[in-house]
Length: 279
Image (tube, rainbow, N blue to C red; front, side, top):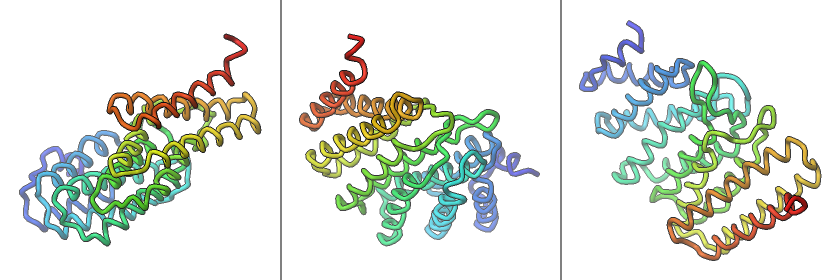
């Protein structure tokens, strides 16, 4: 019987030996290019096992360590199927972090390693495709943002990680993409959740204002070096969409009015720089 068939008729109350074998097979196929097996069966089964308390602590740690290892499988490679392994390992780690945020069963030392992994993954992932024809969602930027958000939300996260997280967000915004196409699958919205989590954790408004200005200055450097060619226009689109998402999210949450005004000012400056000749 295939793994897909077994998962469709899966008994989560099976004895531990059978469950251990199933867990191992799911880990080994977490990056399957069969979207039904990967998204609907393996990921959903991991979700049920983790969130509905079917696992022993040892089994949960085994899954976490297996996903940590796979999170960096062939990292830096573009346009091959390894991205599915990395991206969906990130999603399973999100489940474990979210559960541990409430239950606090994992050792702090292990959680801190996962927090550092999440920052590194967002920085290092280079295959930033969203939906892949015939294979489904890779969506590594969105899944990486989900992972980093879960890391920031965990009680072990300290405000001392703020600069590293912002560096990771900046790296995500300026990723080089095939055909110079901007993000089109709501990646900017998912990245905003990281910033929102940092605000909740106590990141200073002044630090975030400085970071927004740094992003704008970096974009300006690309304009000077690349002019109005596709490479710059792609970066501009990603950054401006991110700024807009941040702006409206801050308005909705009624948070950090000075940051909100700074983002509005930066958006206005870019509008004037790019379009004033046409106004």
